[in-house]
Length: 540
View 1 (cartoon, one colour):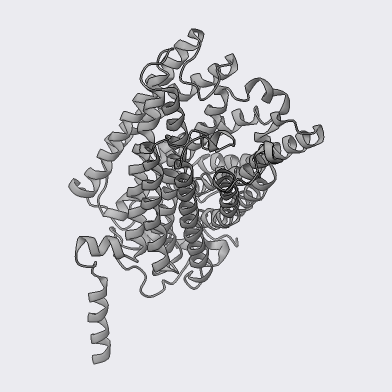
View 2: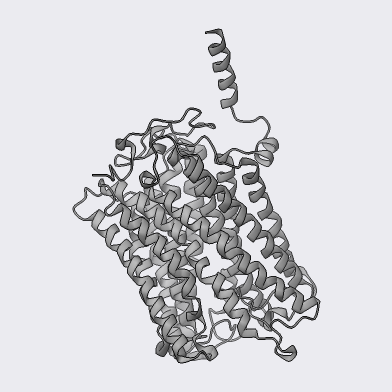
């Protein structure tokens, strides 16, 4: 009995957060703290990358050279993409994974907590290194985020810094992925079978395998760039017998799965949110898992649809075109399942649900418009034009970023214990959804009219659509200040306390713990019954 009492007091002492601000955040091994660090870092990077996008859109507001030199414009297009992909979207998803996966599977923490801390703290150094290249002699990287040689090798020593930064991002990603796989496979609560896990956990498990598979490929490609630049090898230098097209093949073997690394966790988030607010179990739970796994597999065998204009044999073009079309099938399954989940549900339209519905509609638009450049005859007039941007950004902004915002609104009350302002959340949603379409939709027309991409000056014929697109860009950028305001208000100033089960239709282990979630959750494994599962009893 005395032993039990001692044990209890010991446990209580452990439940308190570590003392001291620096000590807590610098050395933390707690999955919630590390999740928060990732999310705050992603938000900062989102605004840094966004400010670069604002410079691009300000320059393109009118024809002629307005604000910046062409070289600096190219630096902005390059670093904007690298910051947004590796600094904003991916860390945000890793942060959500860190926060929610242990809560959703009933684990006390991540499997490898020290490595978890290390995988985060690599990132600020990597991005400091990347951004420092803007101030180096010989300027920063100007080869676009794809880093195609020979363009990416033109520049001073900054090339080495960019490549080293990419290596560090890759190491961080691989460490995070190993941690997630180890956690999901080894630390599930008793009774939490693989086919009882929430879809968000499944989406991250599959994404983590993708990360481990493709990050070394990128590392290999950029290392070969490095040796070409500084050690006079000729991997991609045609003058020495190399082949610049080989770089494209290696890069896109990484690059295409990378697109899915940035969208699969979003599928998981939306599959959590829609059933909650439709008050129905997710339609086709197992079909959803198979669809995510199929998309992940197919993403490896379609890379060359980015390269139809390099002079591939006709057989190669046909293969990659049909393989690309194949991805539309599992994606269609997912959209069908989401719509069917909503069908005849008792739906309410809180902010997370609005973002989830916008995701389904706009992601589908992005997916359909992406099929056009994936068909060989349509590629030739649109390759290298502004038409490349809208499908990519509809998938990444209205897909990945909207899903991240939906997740923050959905889980924020669980994280901080306070409800956000629903009114301001909805204002933020409507401003974002209108402005993002004003920003990207006109770019379809610019591309079809033949406006080249990555140029700071253009023909006066393209002026009107560019002006509309820029206005949409500034409007979207300013709208995100509202998002920060809503989150800060909820965390620090809101008087509206959240209950344990924040949302009426929410099911799952995370809704069985208090709001805010205690610093140490599940010190004893929870007992799982089917009522806790978001998708009901899958065996029925």
